[in-house]
Amino acid sequence: MERQMLRAVMEKLMEADRILVCDKSVDPKFELGAVLKYFKNKKPVLFNNVKGSNVPVIGGMFGDREIFYRMLKISHEERIFKFMDAVANPKPAKLLDKGPIKENIITRNIDITRMFPIPTFHEKDSSSFITAGIVVIKDPETGKRYTAVRRLQVNGRDRLNILVASPMLKNQIERLRERKKDLEVAVILGYDYRFLLASQFSSELYGVDKYEIDSALRGEPLELVKCQSVDLEVPAYAEIVMEGVIPYNKLKTEGPFGELMGYYGGVADHPTIEIKTVMHRKDPILQVSFPCREEHLSNGLVREMELYMHVNKFAEIKDVNVTIGGGCRFHGIVSINKKLEGEPKSVLIGALGSSKDIKHVIVVDKDVDIFDGDDVEGVLATRVQGSKDIVIVPSALGSGLDPSHNIQEVTDKIGIDATKPIGEEGVKFEKARIPGYENIDIEKYFPNF
Image (cartoon, rainbow, N blue to C red):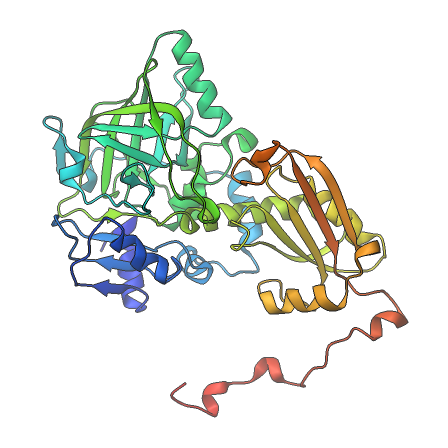
């Protein structure tokens, strides 16, 4: 029985019949990604026969909210408080002498293009891309570790581009560039739900070692081993680890790449990674994520925690949803138990100010299912009058991942109060209901449903 990481959760997913197994030959260029996209990245798919390779590929692992909860052993209702507790009470990881990731160690004649079937997803993508790689670095001065999912453009046998978007990583590279020093790095593939989720907590905001957040979420220490050629630690049960350095003085053009919301990202010079060592398990499984739902769902779960923290002081909050349709960052829906007429507007102000990425926020009553698009659209149609219920904040700080933001580098933010009035007027907005409907057992009527 596996201890941690990908194979451990694959066993559980197989037992629950939640993985589709594809034995038909698929081309890693376009075809593999097309299959994952067909299922909207919500269905784990294991590809056993990838053209040109004997390495199986798994994708679609992290795009379904309910599977995420199941693998984390949490309920939807308790998720926010579990995440808060992990940040407030991180737990130490455990360093082992050896682990399965060290079953194969390659230091010479490295060619990742031959070793692994790295996909090309879209017709205008500049190259094949590693999209599921979790990058770990260590601050040379403090020794603190940082992890994040970064897209990695394949530039050849042992060369990658790394998209540097976070201010923390940019500053780290800039400081080392001034000192003419390279930055050691490792790319981790073949992990599980807790490891991905932990990587999405902001290092700048929380200042916590994400391996320790993982241990808190896991309820046991994350098990690590030392890398072979760099001073970093990686999960002992990962599938593949690429070790190397980010040279202080080398940039290469990266992009375009089809990413968030289905648009191509920009083209720019970014740092490179020179791979020095590849470690992998016996019969490794390559983990991929079709851009970008899988990473962004986990990021959205963390953003829901942060949104809740920002608005909870203004009203009694029932739930929050940072929607998948809004890229798990642009759209927020907040359900409240409205007691005073001013509460929805206060919640809107708090929500719109909670992150530069949030662009549109809707506040609804507790009788609305904020994870049901039809329910939300229904109250937009029946409980909103534009002249008094819509708030517009023009020319605010926004996200560079929004193409409309990039025209003038500012974003108009919109808040919508879709709550019903308090008191007698509110009675007119009560929804018709069937007593006992919420407890209906449809299999009683259709046993094979």
